[in-house]
Image (cartoon, rainbow, N blue to C red; front, side, top):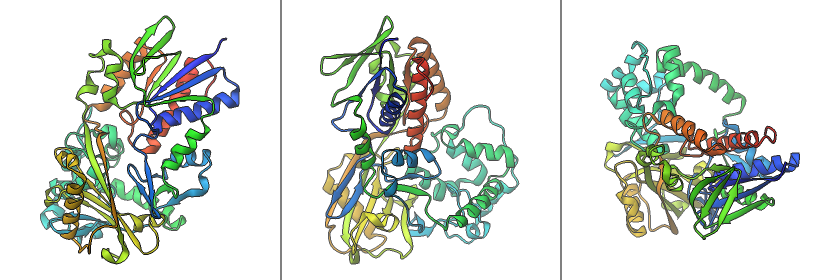
Length: 472
């Protein structure tokens, strides 16, 4: 059998995972495969980018990953960064409702209460809101054929006040989307399964929380998130250094993909053509239709699937300039509170390694579905808007030592209702027409870093199986 060639389109964490684990299989099993990785931007890593300045470590994109989803922790170890893994410091998170920071009730899991006493005494909700949430204890489960929105599901179980003041701010902080458009089955199928199994979300989550608490006690209350103390970009750089059997092309777009005989021809923006036996496309969904001009009907969902634009503002201060709650790590903002910021992390309290001693690092977020215009404002306008919002909550003395604004334009794919069915349909049709081409990444089956790595690993297995060169 002659040599085979695999092309990876997209150099974010999914594409890098494909390249890294595919190369590992090639080396371990002496496989006759050549690999090319093609990235449209001049750097690898996608949304992962770290800035180091004056002793601060600032993440411009994601800052961590869930430890319980093992693949990110494993990748860090696989690339030689295991000794640099750190867990977040555990502290109190808040929700901003009106002009007051309210502690998130103890035991709340994505806003679903599991500690009744903490929920009942919370100032986040009116008595009417608490009574409505208690209906969950008695409401029957509802069998739904097909998908439903996150907002509709949680509103039916717990009422609109709990959704508006707790669940929506928490979810918006992760997905920056409209929860009345976002898909329950694509994002949190687990909650639907709990309703079907336990009838009550509160009772079902409480049973799970009890098991989780027992495990946490064994692990001495360490945080559930992990990062790399040298910055997440260290993972990207470590992978890139180790891709010694992979040709990496940066700053080059894939203009079109054509099937000719048994090979795929990738026409590139620099005028060259790469040929491949198999292709893994990890680019964001809105970049894919142009690669297949004859498949506009098949890929129509990608054109209507939205992406939200957000911006982050990292601000460094002397420690005495900002008075933060002793045990606080940050807050999310209720949509109806009249603030532009959607969340703020007191980064140095959550991740002590990110700031020098005697300094404070804040990271605020702006932009969400339906309110994205602020992202296009000049840096100084965004920074002042954030400072004005923060000053309404806690006095901020003087100007920041420095500020860094990061815009992530149309960077948050939105899994809208029906997402899974649409993705399955596209993958099925494309798989029949273009065997050996695999679509995967943040637009498909999970936005988080571990989800992307898992998808990358699966793509490696699929490619090797397609090429009849063993199972990864």
